[in-house]
Length: 317
Length: 292
Image 1 (cartoon, rainbow over the protein chains, first blue to last red):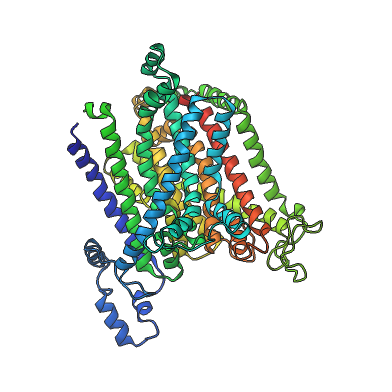
Image 2: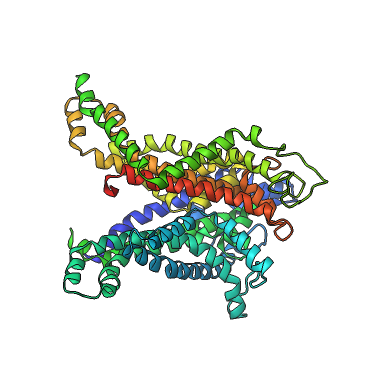
């Protein structure tokens, strides 16, 4: 199958998925108790003012029309205004997204640095103590509640030892060193969870490739074991791991909700939680919509990568 | 005609398979230990009134944030409540928050998944597109958004987590149903004139159970963490009732003065989630022929 045909097919599924995402998010707003126009009017309870607001935001129109108008604005990048700060939600998103992306990138780097070597070593030494320990650590990474791990690390490294700041965020353009120290603990907390997933997938992919015929051939040609593992087996085992990485990256972009909360990092997750507590629904809708879209697009990216990396898929159909 | 399909379903073989799976599971020491740990947690939750040395909500202003001692083995919290008693009672909230959302998710996803996978057609298309849409919003975000819309409280948090967990199960049941519906015994049952609901319930449903059990054990673990997260944010269990997540919420404000307040609830969550994940791995190995 040609690449463009594959991408076109996947886009054919992606568009209706995103449509339903937007419907779900829009209907959440409709389920809200209370009258949105009254809420927007705030202190002002004058009937004329409420009616004016209702007309201005088209709240007097039928719900499908309201959805259409809302979607039209969203597609133009207009997510409305934050009730709390009275600034456009688009500006809020633009200022928070880079922070979350930086956090996700650093977490991913930590996850790859721990997860892939651990998976390789554990597969190459299957059944030994090293394998058992690596598996146990991976399971721990998957099982630990990350917000608690964050609290414990703050307790150790910030409160007891005083090596790292407990919370807060310094942008890299202000002070790169402080930026890195402020992002280190939260990245580690998020990275350990992903590292566990990476390790388990790398291990099982490596076990498969290590049992393949071409690896046996390489060994029969007396290629050194190190080269067999790192060159012959790992290169092929990395294909599923790369796609997994893209999916996990998508998850990291939105999965940092509690970690950002604990470390007071002003990213997407904190924006969402603050939005929830301030009943700032335009913000909540926008964050959910943008993270779902990013997740769907990264998933598509992962599939395309998998398609490109796997010649057998290209050959089929 | 009523005898035929029952013979085709071959119950003795199914029973043998279950027995074999149980033996496979018992042969894995890690899974056995994990099972014992989960049982232990359940017993503790059930026996909390007998085991807890104090009333979990009894305030004692003479014992504010006292470190562990003979009277309070795990110390006291910011209003002098016994941490051990709150941990034991909190096990109830956490285990319920693990089991009830999964029950909600399974109760709705099994019919939806069977319908989607077995009946197919435009219905399948519609269910799957809505399902994909729900899957593309991360689990915790769905739970937080729904819990916020439903209002804070343990009951609402459990409903929110149940809805958030739903799409994974729908996809799983549908996928298994799709794979099984082309099996020869299903075609034979249809050829013998079994009605569609009968085929779906007697021939397809039992075969979706093994992967469903594996997913359930993993999702109970995820739901426990989700409840703790929601309670930590103040959207789950409301004070003064104890839950491990809400205990961590209070603990965060007294990290330097009373670290024990934060240590133990987290260890409990870690312990039960780890045990459930190991049990899930063991179940998968025992039930999935590919791992045998």
